[in-house]
Amino acid sequence: MTEAPDGRALMLAVAGDRAGAFEALVDSYETRVKAAVARSIRDPSSVDDLAQEVFLRLFRARHRYQPSARFETFLYRIILNLCINHTQSRQRRRTWSLDAARDEQGTGYEPPDPAAEAPLEAMARSERALAVRQAVEQLPDNQRQALLLSRFEGLGYHEIGEVMGLSLPAVKSLLWRAREALRERLRPVLGELERTPAEAPGELP
Amino acid sequence: MTDADRDLLRRFLDGELSRDERAALEALLARDAAARRYVDDHERLWAALGEAFADAPGSSPASASWRQAAVQSARDSERGSRSLLVHPRWVAALAASLLVALALWIGWRGERSPLRDIPAEDQNLVRYLHVLQGLDTLQRLGDEVDLRGEFEVWRAFEGELEDEG
Image (cartoon, rainbow over all chains, first blue to last red; front, side, top):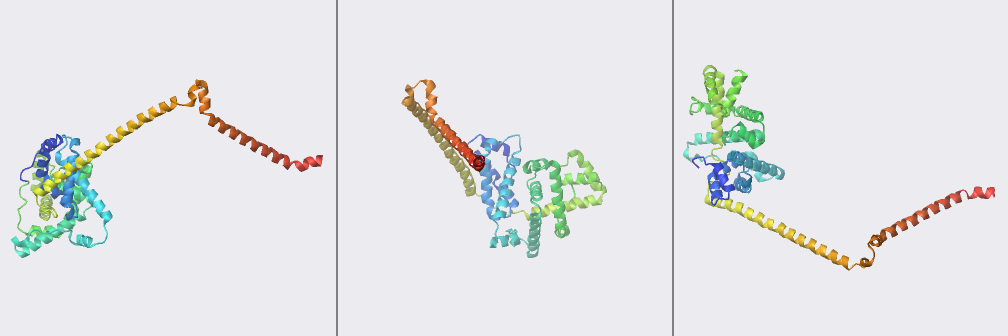
């Protein structure tokens, strides 16, 4: 997906039961939905199923869609609810198993293919990635969700508040606490990044 | 850094800064080393997050078969719920037919009733005869209880009456 699709127009077409509209919506948002689900849950094997469930719920809710709301807000609310339900039911079912042991150790994350990099650089990169993922997973659920919505979905305070059902000050506070907690936990990792030649902060984005 | 400066930085980091506030932020960064460090830290954190989640774990690459399955399951679910919707209609129609049949049967039974030859004012009396009979039974039982009570009182005072006699 290279350019942002017009989610609202697509969803309105789906709501109007226009032929091929739902297929186009799935086509446009598949990658984004799967990525959002994958970041939100701790169970990589369920990503595809949950992403499918997201589209199923979108389809069922198509006649309730209000075009006044940004489509992404509507979409992320569905994703968030599903992921929370999934995590809670998984916690309830959780029994001691090889899967649980593996999850606690490595979160099922597979680092980027190191073949293309120098071995030391690749190792450092994968260790850093693992440390960051673990730090994010240790955040309380609401902080983690707010952070992920801000960092990866590009949602602002208002939209995060709508998705999570929170007030503006609550969202600001969550983001602030999440960022501070990560800064604290990842101090060594961030220090390492400072030493590696990276793009200079320079101009404000 | 003042609280206002911190708030400005936070809103910048959260992407909430307005165009007008941008100049204020640039001035703050130019004069305050701590603010610059803060922004640098944040940018490193944001970069580290991007790197860590670059390849979302567990997410399969976009595929035509997955998309087809997602579309199909959504359509199937609706077909399923539509076919479920047919059943309540049938049930409602069946219930309505039963009600009509019941009403007709009651009417027919009423016409065949032995009460039909009795004057209207007496029909209720006959219809509720069993209630009246029940009340009679209760009355009789009550009378028996009263009689037994009186009898026990009489026996309690029996000796005194004999003494007097």
